[in-house]
Amino acid sequence: MKEKKTGRIVEISGGEKLQGKLSAMGIYPGKEITKLSHFALRGPIAIKVGRAVFALGHGMANKIVVKIE
Image (cartoon, rainbow, N blue to C red; front, side, top):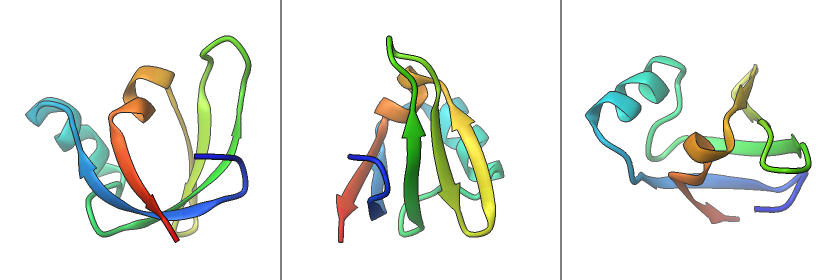
């Protein structure tokens, strides 16, 4: 997903622990997210979910499957 793009989460391809962590942040299938920025060399990725902004590690963000609208 490129910067400044919005999409809807289709699935989270991680285990129950990861899904629980993301769900607690309001990141779950069906939710709309916007990618704000990313840092070079596999650093954190900033996303916006509702009014909240989160920085996710590259590995965690990679497990979120998004359909771009």
